[in-house]
Length: 199
Image (cartoon, rainbow, N blue to C red; front, side, top):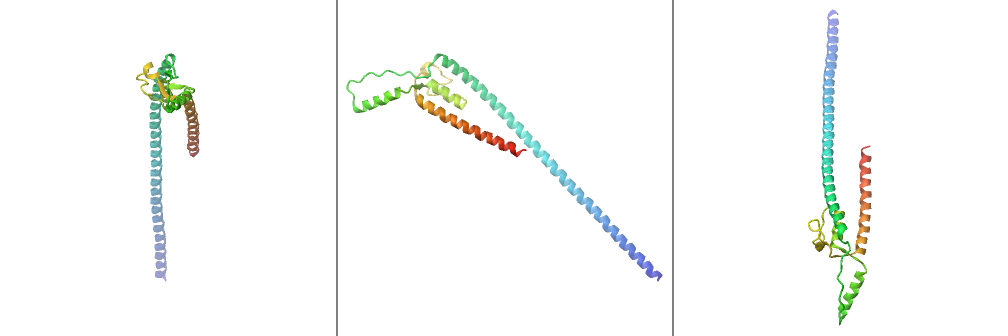
């Protein structure tokens, strides 16, 4: 009976030892799992911080490039504006046209050409100087028309007929205004979309 009691105690001690060993192993495993999770979480946070920092640097770089481009464009516009103002004070924007001499005997083709010329004369023509200023202002850089441009704004280069009538220029202005309004709306919607995604 005594031996049986001892066996029971030993068995209980073995069970308690096994339970203690299992609990210890569980604690060690749990601690190891917890450490692995913490390390993984720390790595995820570090990666997120690195991505945020890279994005911030990318934004700063883009902003710096934009500021440099804006300054360059402003300098070019100021240079063009100075040239335009000097040109407008001394040169016409409407082209000078030679007066046609009457033809003694006109063929059918000459009569048709003369009719077209009369119609064209009702619509004042822009000089190369006017077209140079128009296109340069539109594109934000020196855009010569024929020989007329920033390099040569002389009357000889700029006063001649550019072949563009005032009515055509007004049509072009209306188209440009329409395109500008569409671009402005597109840009605003893009800005709204980007800002909406960050809230």
